[in-house]
Length: 603
Image 1 (tube, rainbow, N blue to C red):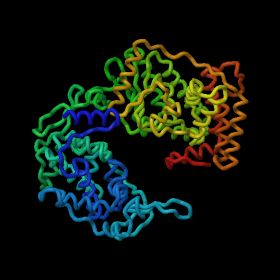
Image 2: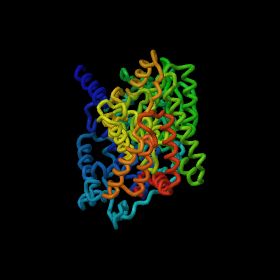
Image 3: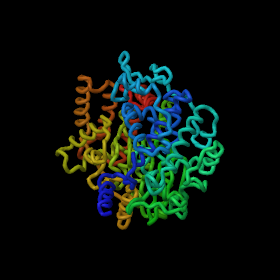
Image 4: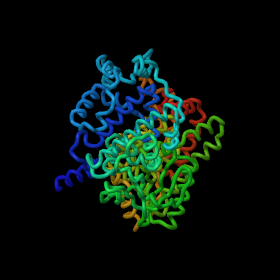
C-alpha cells in the first residue's frame, strides 16, 4: 500500500497523470474494452456496408469519442498489430468470454498488411494521404473492393441526443446501437473481474482512450431503463450490474454517487486537492447565465466564470456576462476564477461576427466590437477583487488577451497560448498589444534601451508565436514568473481558487501603467526588418502590411519617448490599426479561409 500510494502521488502531482487501480487481467481495463469496441465496430461496418468515413463519423462525436473513430484509430496504432492482439486475447481469455465470440477479422485486413498498408507508419491504411500535382489528397479504402478513392465526408445529420440517434432504423443507427450496446454490456460483464467499481472503468477509458464519457456514463446518457428494455426486447441477457435498471451515477447535495457491485450508491471519491466544476454544477444552479458563459459559486467567497460557446469563442454575450460578473462579484464575492472544463480554454473571438460586419462594410459595428472588448477587459483588470485565469489547451487571440488582463494565472501544463491575430490578417485589438508590451517592458532580464522590448513584442505577435506548454508560455512571457503551473488538470480549479482566495484578503487593483516608447525610430527599424524578411521569401507582401501596422502600435505611433503614453493611448492605436486592416480584402480572405478550413492563409 505504501508503494502504491507513492506511485499514485508522484503520477498525480508530478506527472499530471491519473492512476486507476485495476486487477491483473489480460489488457487490464482500457485495452480489454477498447479492443472489443474496435473489433466490434470493424465487423459491424463490414456487415452493414458502411464506408470508413460513415463509420468513423457516426461512432465518434455523438458518443464523445475522438474523431479518429475506429478506422482512423487503427491507422494510428498500426493495423498490423491487430492480429497479434486478437491472438493474445483469444489465448488468455476464458472460453465463455464475449471477446472470443466476436467474428474473425475480415479478409481485407491480412491483405492490407501483406501489401504494406499498415496505417500511418506504412503506405497508408483505411485512409491515406497522397501528393497529387503539389496538393495533398486524402483517400479512403472501399471495404468491399479494397480500392482507394478520394475521401468524402458524409453528409449525415447525427442527433446529439443518444436516445434519438439510437432509436432510428437506418443503417447508421443500427451500426451505432450494435457497436455501443455490445461494448457497454461487455464492460458491465467484466466487473469485478477487471476492477472493483464502475468509476475505475470509466476513468480508465477516459484517460486511456480519450473518451469524454466512460461506458457506465454512456449508459446513463442513453438512459439505463431504456437501454435495458431494448436489450430485453432483443432477447439479450442483462449483466448483473444492470439488473436493477437504474442509472449508475446520481447526485445529492453537490456530491456525486456511483453504484457499487452490490448496486448500492457510494460517494465518488476525489483525491485531496482535486476540484471539478462538473461536481459543483451537479445540484447547484448558476449565479448568472447566458448563451455563451455562466457564473458559478465555488464556495469560500470565490466564483468561477465558465465559457461554454463552441470552442469557447468570445462574443458579445461573453462580454455582457463579464460585465455582469464584475458587478455581482463586487457585491457578493471576494474573488473570481476564469476556468472551464472543455478541451480548450478559448479559441479567441468569434470570427463569424467580424466577417459579417466587414462584408457589410459596417465599420461602426467593427469598431463597436473592438471597443466593447477593450472596455470589458479593462474593467476586469481594474475590478475591486482578484481575478485568476485558469487555462488549459488552447488560449488564443481574445482568449489569450483576457488572461493577460488577469491579476494572476494558474495554468495547466498543457497550454497553447498566443496572440495569433496576424494569421487572420489582423492584430490583437482587445488590449493584447498593450498588455504583452507591458510584460516585455517589465522583463528584468531584457536588454537595456527602449527598442529591445518593442522588438521582442513585435516578433512574438507578428509571427503569431504559440507556446507548446505552460513552461514555454513563461519563456515567451505570456505567463509571468509568479504565475503557477498545475500538472494535473483535476487540480487546476482548486489551485486557482486557492490563489484567488489568498489574494483577496488584502487586494488592491493595479496602478495604471504608463508607456515610454521610442516612436518613429523603432517603427522604421521594424519596417526595415520586415522588408528584409520579405525579400528573402520568409514572409508575404501582405505580412509586411500587417507588420507595419503592428510596428506603429508597439512603437507608440507619433510620440516622444520623454512623454509617457497611457493605456488608453495604446488601446486607441490598436483600434485604429485594427480598423485599417479590416478595410483590406486580403484580411477578409484570411478570415474567411480560417473559418472555412481552420488553417491560416498565406496571401
